[in-house]
Length: 107
Image (cartoon, rainbow, N blue to C red; front, side, top):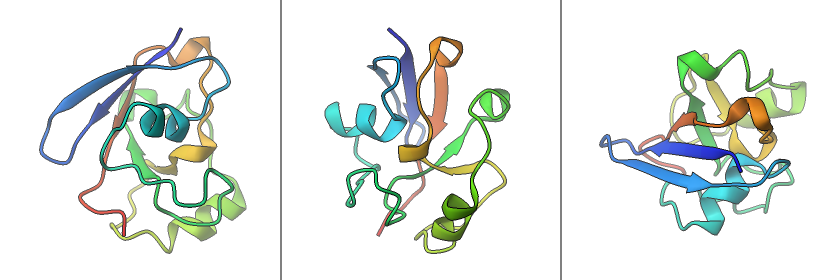
């Protein structure tokens, strides 16, 4: 069972268990993590699940696809090179301990 560590904008760490195949957004919403809204339910139609993958994990989290990059342009918080839509990051055994930083705002 992979663990995702969410780091809020003010530095609070929240550890949540997920299942292989879950998206990071699903893990956040299921555990009531404030800072991930996921208005579209994970269909990549909004940017309310914007997050920043920790630098040490960016290579394992996969690359953005074109649609994701386009949607991130609508994010409430400024993009970084590590910006992802958390609905597009799927957990696998290599992502156990994944650290995800949350932006100050989603909407």
